[in-house]
Image 1 (cartoon, rainbow, N blue to C red):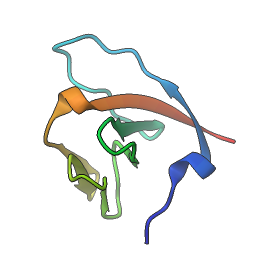
Image 2 (cartoon, rainbow, N blue to C red):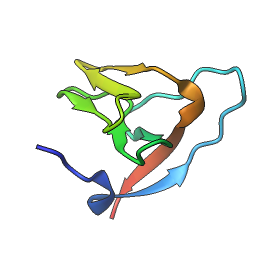
Image 3 (cartoon, rainbow, N blue to C red):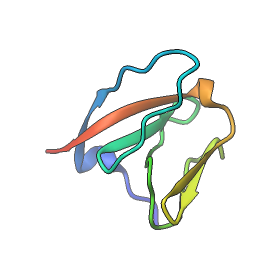
Image 4 (cartoon, rainbow, N blue to C red):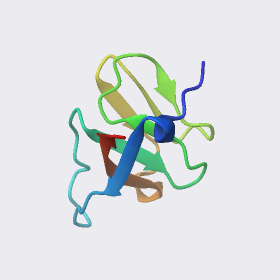
Length: 77
């Protein structure tokens, strides 16, 4: 089942410097710039973007190309 998180959350960009690790947390999500899919930075259920750049499960996210990932903060609508 694919869930569009944009229907539940309002997203705002998170600032991070080049060369620094991407932020993580319960309210931080990653948006894939290739396919525009949003997944949690700490997913506890299996999640993946359409192009395969982002995937995660059990609280950990795997990122193939971090240059194509934008961290965003989600707030419930």
